Amino acid sequence: MNITLQIIWLFILAIPIACISWTITHEEIFREPREWCTKNAINGRTIIKRKFFYLFTCEYCFSHYVTIIFLLICDYKLLLPDWRGYIISGFALVFVANIYMSLLGLLRQAIKKEKVEIAEIEKSSDIKI
Image 1 (spheres, rainbow, N blue to C red):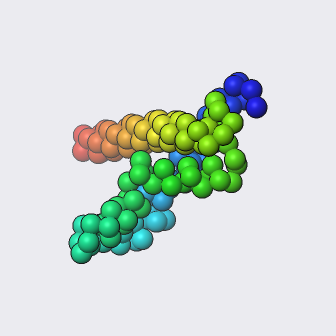
Image 2 (cartoon, helix red, strand yellow):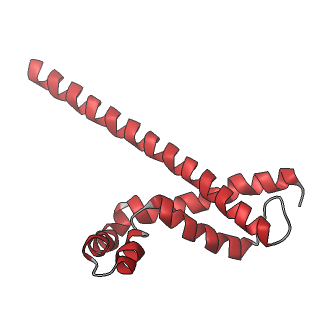
């Protein structure tokens, strides 16, 4: 696979990694399991138990494991055709996926801020009438 195609794969393959990582660690549909994992991450008796459950609450940490699954499924290697290509592609995918998640977080924050500002404007205009 030539370098151009490898780079295209990098940016496209990072999209589902970011999507899965964000959904599991932030969205409402996984709130109950995430709260349970958070409780176990805080109150676990051993450090291994605490760290294991923390993985499901941190998008950065979780994206490493999602990336490993995608590397196994897609057999994607970056720059080198051997095992070193897996390592390079793994960290590159995590990096790009986390850029995507950061952009999504900023976008959602801006949207939430706008909704709050609109609600305040509507509330103040109702009071004046």
